[in-house]
Image (cartoon, rainbow, N blue to C red; front, top):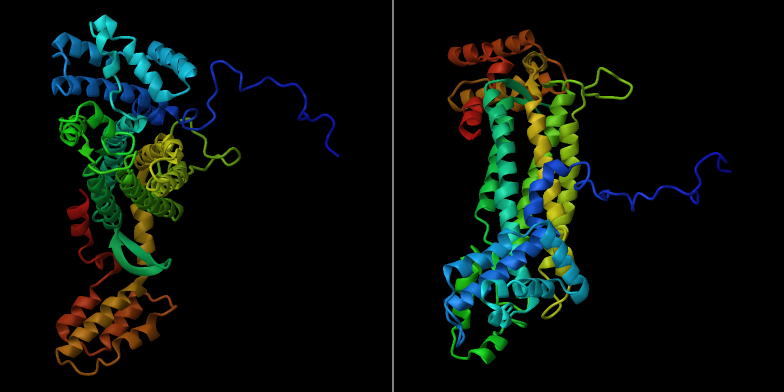
Length: 478
């Protein structure tokens, strides 16, 4: 039986849902708002409406500039500035006004049309009210608005965050380029590398994904209710509507999609989200590796003044930045993968699954941006524990077995006798056993190698057996 003094479900409580100012439901708009706030300018509902106004205004200007219809005036520079001012002045009051219009129309794009029309009289363009949203279906405006918002969010927010994290990672790779480190394959001691080379692998992989994302095309269309320019031709049959549409889409800084249904096919979005998700997965792998290096002491974490690592264990400095990043990368990918698979399908000409899905783009990118912020901060709190790394390496001399058996093979090929079965002989000596420097040197002395090869192997130590790791780290750390 429940404790009678406990708060029961039906007791009166202050409603948090009714609290003012309103309380965010999700972590991105609450706890982590500061890390993802720049995305609000591009992928929030308000930003979408501002982009819709931008597209409608530019279409209005474009039609006048190209004199598509008889009777269209040539707009003055003041009128063009005034039209574009509707976009640049879009703020809190305008958001509220647009919301009131939408409450009446129960249609977001129609509300934008009426919002713009209200302002034409003040620009001396009242007689051109019918030109607002001319020959457009809602998706003509929406697809271009989303494309502009996604492009700006990626180029102005996500990519800078990714580059900042990469810069921190590059610096770490350069700093640790020559720090010898025992590698582990299957979690077991393996041929040494350098810490910097292992970090540089991630710099190289992540950098490649960034370059792919930098080359992303952002597609758009403005071809009517079923992609046929039917209404356009009905109004102006002599106009080159595909050419007019292409020129307009390109003035927005987008790539023209010449053939669609009612909706732009969203293939570019699926491509973009797949690339960002792949970047996220590589970054997730980095976080796991860094966490593991911290766990075995290869990195020391620099304590943050005043921070608490554990509520009961005061000695702890937890790798929370990398753990937080892991979780947010997983959430980001769940959303990006869902968007990528959903958006490329449509029932015949149109259904609203894409519209509902696209409202979560900001959330998907937001969790990735939050992860990048945590990785950037986490990297700044790492200090290479050279002495721990060196001790770990020095206690695993058996990793030189690979070098010895490979030299034996080369000597045998060169004609030195008595070096049969090199792998098997090293396996018998080293597999599952601890082998120190003296045992290895004793083994090498009894092989009958050439004097030069024997001398080379006797002077080889685990910290010298790193091949080209240091030079590779320096080459690929940027």
